[in-house]
Length: 248
Ligand SMILES: Nc1ncnc2c1ncn2[C@@H]1O[C@H](COP(=O)(O)OP(=O)(O)OP(=O)(O)O)[C@@H](O)[C@H]1O
Image 1 (cartoon, rainbow, N blue to C red):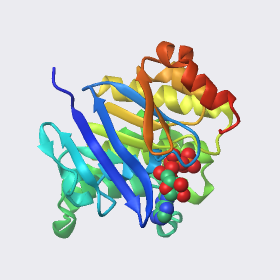
Image 2 (tube, protein in one colour):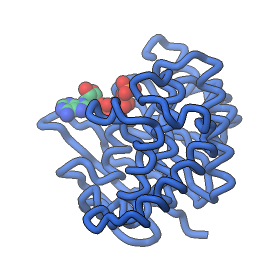
Image 3 (cartoon, rainbow, N blue to C red):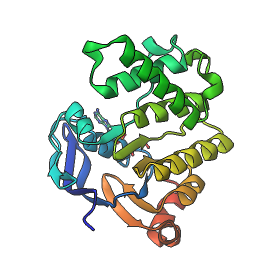
């Protein structure tokens, strides 16, 4: 089967600094794929390239066979690529339910013609999604009062509201305790599998990666060092050298 996403010779420079140097990368439909590597390897840059957030991306990124490398973020989203965002300050005073409702209204594309019926429907679906991500009991809580883990669950639910085929998660567990990290990523993996979503995530915790990912790509200094199953990657001498060699 042809890959859901296929990147070829992707290159991105910030001024004279080359952050991504001719990346080749394939993502199979339905797969949970982790992107790992030391700080500054280019992982976030690659995620941003796929999401259409960076100008001047060279090379090819095909999604469902179509070239998406130079589309705007909204166009990329429309084609079925969703990425998580930190909830912005303006929305922190709103409840979890209100944020999730907004996500469903935006996903419906009918923001401009908001009716009572649409609002009720969005609220209903938002309640269901909060339950799906384990936040039913926090529906009325202000986002500002949620724990980091609960906020990340909310952000994950909000990207699921857009019903993308491919979910991009850039360090979804940053700042969380080991236990919380495993809980969140188990939830993400289960929900992604149930909904038939493809998952590409950046994660620094190798234990989480080895448990959750079906395939792993290791990046170092803007290039792909290795790609394979978690077992292959864990046994790869070059990868071990990077992680044990003090570059991490
Ligand atoms: N807007 C920018 N302007 C200039 N250089 C940038 C910019 N964004 C990122 N870089 C540089 O590009 C390189 C890759 O950064 P990127 O954030 O993609 O790496 P990363 O693998 O995600 O790292 P981390 O694990 O620390 O998040 C780094 O050296 C970074 O300093």
